[in-house]
Amino acid sequence: MNAIFKIAAVALAATAAVGSHAESYPAPGKTITIIVPFTAGGPTDKVARDLAESMRKQLNNATIVIDNADGAGSTIGTAKAARARNDGYTLLLTHIGMSTIPTLYRKLPFNVLSDFEYAGIINDVPMTLIGRPTLPAKNFAEVKDWVGKNQGKVNLANAGVGSASHLCGLMFQASLQQEMTPVPYKGAAPAIADLMGNQVDLLCDQTTNTTSQIAAKKVQAYAVTTTKPLSTPALKDLPTLQSLGLKDFNVTIWHGLYAPKGTPAEVVQKVNEAMKASLKDPEFIKRQEALGAVIASDDRITPAGHKKFVEAEIAKWGKVIKAAGIYAD
Ligand code: ASP
Image 1 (tube, protein in one colour):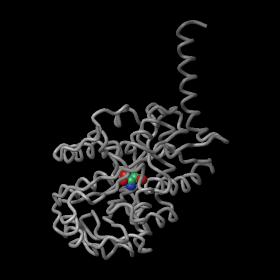
Image 2 (image 1 turned 45 degrees about the vertical axis):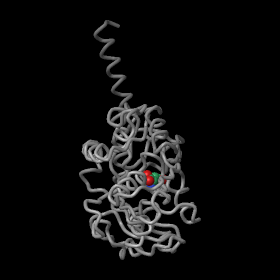
Image 3 (image 1 turned 90 degrees about the vertical axis):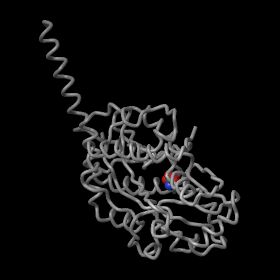
Image 4 (image 1 turned 135 degrees about the vertical axis):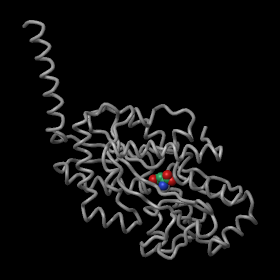
């Protein structure tokens, strides 16, 4: 074989290999693992399990398993995903933390922008401020009063340093200008369990985790973190923190799907298409809406739209975190 012919043959084989990635993805019998960097049963986990259930139908009934690689405010699981094989059989589903950890942690073993392929944003989820059942405060004015009288003694649970509940809690303390004691967990599932058991006082967490507990009156609910009240039946009477005088308080959590850097573009495209179809699946939409979540806008359900959005979020939250001087390390 002469040299030019050899190069052409190699190039042809490479093209065929790339094409076959997409055609055969997911290969029969292969399992897709979605890494969730928080505990099982928490809000990020719930979104992942719901999405996996629907995506499976779009991907020839492939087996999709969730790997809860929790701890250190999502950074352990996210690092694991960055190091995983980039063949499309390991994905990462995480939340707004992807845009806050680059500022909250001054040293990370991965780069959120250059170590991942972006598959699309899934949803937007409001947060709620909730309290333990035995907390004497029955509304937000009483919470403010009670926190003031118990300076430094109030326990504010969160899902780990760098998590969304941590960020929300820090903003809450800064707005009230009150010191509270943060209590970090590996995810919001153990945090809300301890709140229901009266072990901690307050928690700010996604409606995907809190709605059913609020409806069942297993926790006390005081306010929502969005600029407008919500329409979900169990949450519709909750005031916004802004309307209660916490100027500029506006936190909405979003979730996105990623693959390790170098995952073939055709495979990422297939994952994106399966995800897009799931976001139109009436069953998935119904489950999300019942928990106060809203399906992401079309412009962000694309790999390029997702990345552009995360870049903007990194800039936005970077300013907030630096202004508040809060760092995890
Ligand atoms: N809700 C958690 C957080 O505060 C994450 C989780 O457990 O899903 O970031």
